[in-house]
Image (tube, rainbow, N blue to C red; front, top):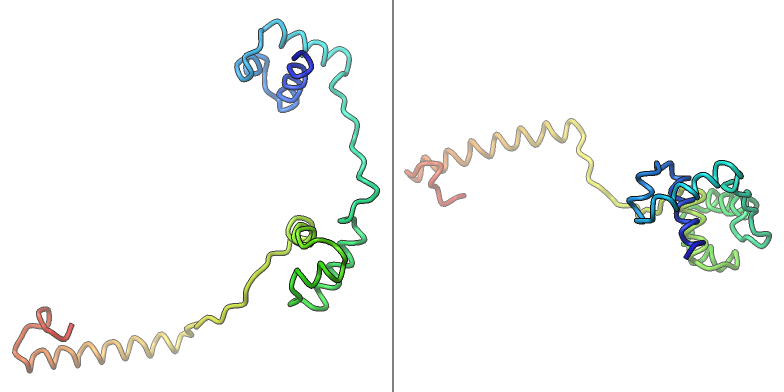
Length: 150
């Protein structure tokens, strides 16, 4: 329990919580929290060594550079084919693309984009059809709002 207390207080202290906040969050005794903080400050117990990257790491800079180069050459290649070609799992390819390279997968969609002259034509045709509708409603003898043409 003592090691768990120390590591919890250490993590909260590294997250820049104050003493009273550290006491409230895990509900440890005041003397325990302040003794641990005192030990951290006086003995440099909080100094952490930098972690070394694993030597067998697959997503290393060389792998990412090759993957990026291949994607720029053939951007439509599916992730499953990339994974088979590189000899890694599909999840590794997904992580490399999303997390490391910052690519987003997308599906090309055909969209109908209206240009300005399209918009003008729609306004003209809308006004013409509205006037035609009013004329038909007037001929039938009913008001335009109560017309059965709606």
